[in-house]
Length: 534
Image (cartoon, rainbow, N blue to C red; front, top):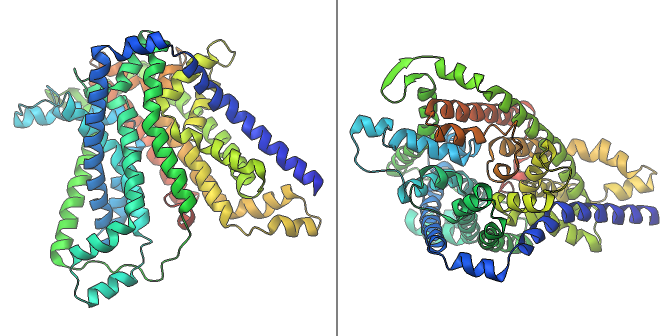
């Protein structure tokens, strides 16, 4: 027992040391770059005040719209007689398979000055500026809120609804008085989650922002283009505020959450008008989500976008000659390494906190969640400052490390929640029988949590393939992650090539999700994982 206790403390200390080096010290180094003079100079400039105001406006508007649409979509899937629910569930989460910059690029291809729909219907309005930022942010954040609401609506107890229905209470009153109070915490969590995504993402604003500059774009220009890390650190520190608030609320709500089991599912609304609304609403949302992806498909094989729709393979061959497949291969390598190392480390952290209770477990648990409070763009800047003079800088390993840290919290929570539900006496029984802990893990625990391990792997892989936030600061001159080629081709007005790269990322991530879900069996223990991958 003493030997196991020492081993447990050593494991906790080692994990804490990893987070100290990969998270705490880089963030502290960013804060140390901030000076009073630099803070005053930047915050008193007109461009800073405009960026703050623009970020708040676009983020708040995007959050409200995304909340309403995602809640309505979740209601349609879970509470109505909507046909083909499985198909709509897949369509609603497609935006999480492509970078935010691809969403914005799709909007330009549809509604830009030479956009397909702009030309076809001779539209006079412009997508650039506030409309484009809000629309792109809504498309990008919608799946996150939808998954949160969908997972909660599955587990609402149907008995109060049945009683209210018997008493003649209308469907609207049941939704207002029963469902909305039940979703109160989820609505708050979703609000801050969406707001954080919208206020810290720079891919959408960089592509369609026009003259409307937001804080992430300001930080990108200061840090990447001007190498002004002191001013960029000021913006980065401010961008941490909404993420830290969201993180604190998430931790508090996890502490208060209690396991519950639904005795009776809520009866589906069978009214013809409700069904019609669900079909029309779901079809419209799906069309809006699919439109950018379908646009990529058309553009890739058009001779000249948007004027000559003749079929051609010229743009595919040209993009391949520019190294797209090489960049894709390296991105897949980054993603595989991040997924493998991240899954192993995530399991180790979750096991240390969920199965080895002690004084250090609580601190390791909080360390494991800290990346949830750090936007990718802030993490990228902090890595530049902290690792710049070290051997790891400019190698593939810093790309792998930053992606593991950036996306670590959600896979960790998947495994933490899964291990917490595995029989807590396994190790004690094994010790009594003379079976070592490692053998218990190998022969008993790992088979029980294999589906969660697959989900963790898929989560790391998909997000590493499509992210542009942190890696845009850290990528070596060559080979860069393939997602960064989208912005490069767009700046060079090679829209067809940018569309091909976006399509490549989408296809690779779609294949990975298909393998994870249907081949390797990830998600079969959805009752454990559902709602934790956010």
